[in-house]
Image 1: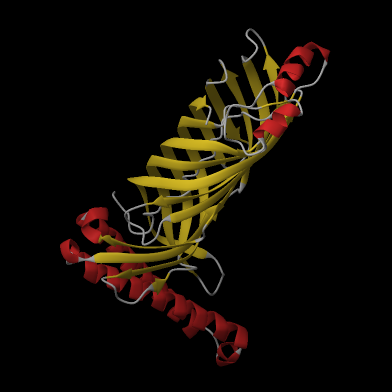
Image 2 (image 1 turned 135 degrees about the vertical axis):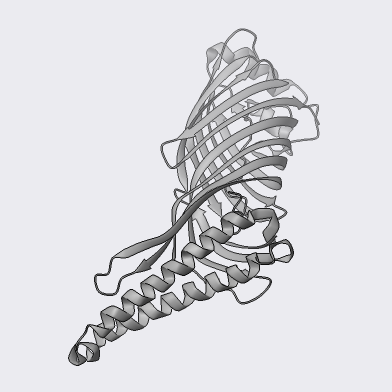
Length: 373
């Protein structure tokens, strides 16, 4: 089934891609020759600002500009609320307390380019430009409540996996400091992911603190870094979009689901009326029972109106559109990350990082080239 009616959005396509380089305060007797050379050498580049002053104080600076190519894979559970759906630019139907998501999983693979500069010795700024292949895997149930028992009955269900392409662009910065090879980095960026089916690009904010250590070996500029940290994603909640119904539904299968929904609503309405008719006059006058009856009918009316509008739209599916609005968020904002980087020299670095210990898992690898500017 190609059910794209509610879920044409790009969720958690986020990028946190700074290679783990930093301005390192050299210390110790074994590094005394390097410290002395840093203090007397003329700093040859324009960036970072105050780079000459930092080297005079014994800081070993990375090259001031770089370009990295990154690959990021992510999978995350999503929470969806405040769902409204309409057809052919008609009334929007609120589906709260009607639709239940058995699962909502967003998966993405992103390839991105990231140019960066060291603006100050302890502040790196960068840009992001990426292309994403993504999918959403959704399980949906339509549920109605029995006012007599308070239990809910599923009248129909369906699932869908939708694949789509998106472009991501963003800006970020990384305040960082290093002493004796140990470092603290506070990576943060804001990114916009442009999905053709959405009215506006989806905005995300990523914060990724990392604490780690560099270990030198071989040549003076060759090392391996290891770190641990966290990965926090904040996603702009509201999503609105519009789609061609023929592109996202198979008419016959959609018609079958609509028929199941209409029959289920009518059966549940009969059950509610039978329950109400079976109450005594005193029980009907009880405000609690009256509230249950009114609420059940309100939900049934909303469900009936939705299925009626969907039935009309599917009868002319080639010319129909579907509009949707929802709030969504990651099930877990934080997950744990561990990573490592091999620096062949001050020009070339290869990095890998994994994230886990929550409903989000991810893998990142990148190759970076640095040069003086």
